[in-house]
Length: 435
Image 1 (cartoon, rainbow, N blue to C red):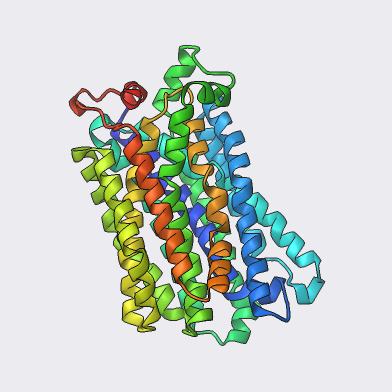
Image 2: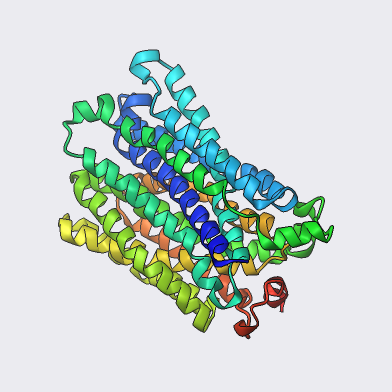
């Protein structure tokens, strides 16, 4: 494989995950700031917010189903074909949301259309990130797999930064204007992003390992069945290991904004700035964590990120309680920009190396999507816990408990890094993981 082909593949994976997380972040932010009143009007602000977050969660419930179906195609028809389809679905649905009429204009049809487009968006996102991990791992060498497999995680930060930046640029609008048209702008940008992504993605070569499997006639007809027969334990451990980045991303990106603006009575500025600062920090943390995982192994670096989140879970809320903008930004940088980003970075190589090439795309996507329903309901769960307990402590327990469960799964799982990276063997990933 030439270096230019590898560069195109990594760039394609990066662009796709930028669009995926841009889509999901702007939806979550709009849910916090606008969708409750625009699509779910109610006499109770809390009821409207809960209804909007429930719609947000619906997309995550569908993601495992879509992820499994599309991931299966990735193992039977090719990784590249699935990634092109994912990109088109995500971009079309996101742009479509920006054109929707509101409840005041068409009544109950408005939330129905919102849910339908949310489902289409979720189908596209269902296999995007997992397939990007698979492609990155299979286009990389053993020596640099931790680093190159962390590139989709960079796309997460870049997508959230882009979405946050667009919303921040609109934060100066009067509330009436923002609710009238300002919220639509971030969604319409999705149309432009998908065109850029397609231009890059259509020029990418198919994964070398899938090409070899196809040439050898070794494609598995039913990869999900084979996966559950041969890798069941690894699917469970991998799903639990990545649960913290799923839950944490929603708590620190979505719920934190709602908490600061609704419960603490702050403007959205400090929380949005904190999310931007955390993701800027992540641009440095992610490749550094990937390099460390190549040098010292996946497990110790993965555990470092998870334990950081567990230790900082309650201090995060203590800092928010001060209502000091600088401390709010610091809280998000520490927990999300460092702890979550370390775990997210290392999970790319860790998950890819746990599964045999014949079922790798299905394995990675199933392991990731298994915790997506929990992630989708996280803002709803956190909002409900806050209302029931009357304090942040219940949400803190939820965050810390999830991080400890993930740490236990990583401890119980294998060290997947190959002991002799100089050999640059691709086919040994699964064998090393099972040892």
